[in-house]
Length: 86
Image (cartoon, rainbow, N blue to C red; front, side, top):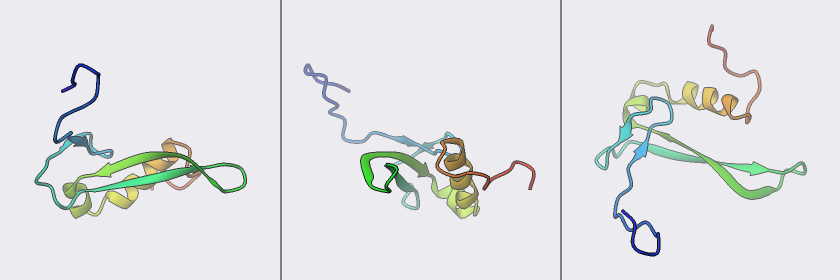
């Protein structure tokens, strides 16, 4: 919900799992959010970052590491780490 100025005023904004696309509920206390910082050519942080969120179900199944590798490779953070055919 937004006020007259256009500011978001909701108390809770649900997140979506980056691996599955499912909503992460407020009661999912085992979910995590990981921010990967962007760096310049010299390795200094530029101030921008990319956020990955993983639900507790993905973490319980042991798929969060593979999912993070796959998503980071899709976004250009990693190269030649994940292949669909292991």
